[in-house]
Picture (cartoon, rainbow, N blue to C red):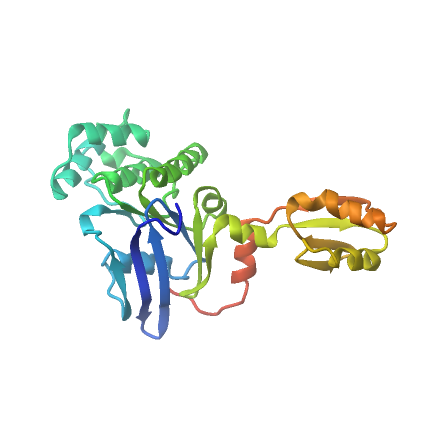
Length: 303
């Protein structure tokens, strides 16, 4: 996916208030074909309300949702807990959903049941399904009509570790097939592994958006332990490939490409300075998320 990929959906100044609380505050997002966009935020950040407005289930107070050549039938979604007929089998539930969207062939239903690991339980009643199985059937329902945009709200809810791993493999595959995926999740490690881009919300506002790899590179650094910290800092700060240097607990954090360790060691050595240790430290999405959302808030409410 690149910035040249076709734009499927855009929100412009999207705003929703519930009484005195602003759940979503002038939100601008874009989702492009082939992109997996992670919508991140703590509880009450506005993720579910945003998804509801995109799907037309919640009416915005301000702003709009622009869907470029994207009719409702080309959008598949699973929001919170999926709802099915309890006394019907998983297969029959998908058949019923298929009729509601204009008819879906048996081969498509069988393929989705197999993809989501439900083939063996396809003819068991839905009420006998575990929470994880219900979640997987909900995703199968979201994919029934071969959608161009798939919206998944906490899709790993109730899944065991094996099921979560299957989900992490499935979501990028949807993007590789050319679909756009909007993944609303609080599982930071999941988003880091499967998303090409991320948008971080806090109290309904967009705090940060960008490619995952670009956001992570901002916090990555090389940590140097050396006896003469100040002299070493002076040498390193003069290097063209170094962005900045921080002094932390008697060590140096050098914000530079992670493969520049040998160049740093060489520059220090030429100045007669020798590091006790020099190690690259990769940033994580969790660190970035906590940094951006750590401001205390007394506001609560729906997400």
